[in-house]
Image (cartoon, rainbow, N blue to C red; front, side, top):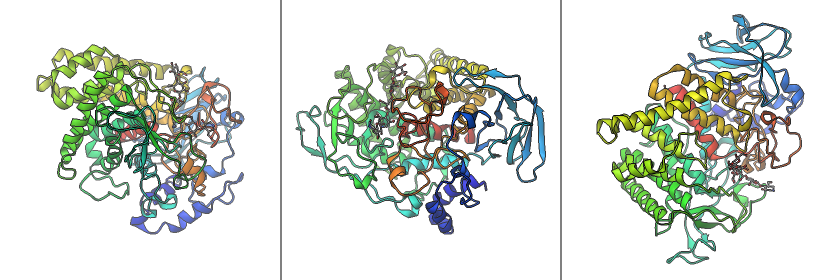
Length: 604
Ligand code: G3I
Ligand code: 9MR
């Protein structure tokens, strides 16, 4: 097994194998060294890599540091040296297995780098490899080619949600070195000023347990939970065979329900309690201020539910509608849940129609804002999901009335999610005559045209990645992933390989084919994110960060004003430090498309 995958795999299966105690102890005692001399041989040697700066990233080969599916496109970015060829080397035999010509140089305006492309798509024999180029001091970080190459990282990206669960003790059996006591039971949550209604007064207590912490902070936000929960539900709905027997070692593993649905249900259980009796949904469950850099059980500030509003309520309606159709197949395990989700969705949608223009008012607390000013996309998405669930034409009419374009989704821009669901269910709706052929074709062509534009952009890009100069905002890595998510829908509808190549490029970008030379997923890759803005990772006295989280990524806004950003260019605006909440935080909405794409590449 690859050494950089070892500690995560051992943590995922700690209880089952019982042999990894020493390894975990080694991780615990590990301290970073410049030389790497103290790093045990089987540990992620990222600890040995000096912190990145522009000088030491320029002359690295940038490639996916984890792995490629056997039949996937395989590209690496090579600095602009005089060599015109490259070699792929088998890391075990040290033999050159493939040599070919580099592309001509091309410049990426987002980073200022002039680079060449090495294309080794035709290497399909499973194994451990690296890439070498004459006159370059460093080879590529080692990577795997094989059908299982992305298996462990997928499971870790999904398991990251377990590590961010509120209202539960993380048992060492499941959490390994990242175990922690129960925190935030959230059974004693106050109605904040502005959140009162006929039957609930300011200061009244409600219970809204469970759910996932949003991010590096410990608050829970409905808008962001919406897109995150949807994307995980879609991952299950689209790749249900892939998830059938996947065991990610969470407390529910081994029950009659796929682990991914058990994990999702943890958040649905919370979301249900964020709906007021009148159908409206609170924006967030939060403290007034962000907590200190402490473990969750070390905080004890009062938590509140804050202001019902239109976008939170529509996010809730959409997710509950999807949950109702997905959990309909698990009636035995969760009797009555599907029906309850349906009722909650309809009630929320009706509330949003009655109160169609209520924005989030950020007056009460300074924690996460997730403020959104335009709600057409939320209406469109919720209507699409309610149509698929109920087959009632009025919802389809409302979907059309919003007249939304397909775009890569993000927390404030969710129209694309409705198109994903309609694309996936389109064939069935067509057969049932719920959609006309014209309607289905129109939905398909909107998705395909969008995916073609992204794919053309990738093919014209010097790094061959789905990132333009203007794409480096807060959470840019989720932008790369959500473009892949949308393009994958075109692949599912057409089977065209060029779309799958773009999806592979999204993943490759996140795992190392980027200007800063990082694998942005904690615990995976020789040079991976080590110091995310994640309170648990910071405060737990474990050197290794909680694994499986993707960092936000380069953000030219640099709102945190931290020192030591790798560079000023947009694609270089990243620093792997706790300080950098604007480029190095983790959140549930950024991890969800990572889970989806890693499943998609393996399940196709
Ligand atoms: O709306 C503008 C758009 O018009 C413009 O083109 C674009 C280019 O910069 O910016 C857009 O606004 C950005 C907004 O996100 C919407 O994407 C802001 O600049 C940007 O500062 C804002 O960042 C958000 C950040 O909170 C600050 O509010 C992130 O998307 C969001 O992911 C992040 O979320 C936080 C939570 O509040 C708290 N929990 C952690 C989480 C992650 O850091
Ligand atoms: O830690 C907070 C992080 O979770 C948020 O995403 C971020 C933006 O809202 O804010 C962080 O908190 C910072 C605060 O906004 C400003 N002072 C420093 C805090 C981090 O240490």
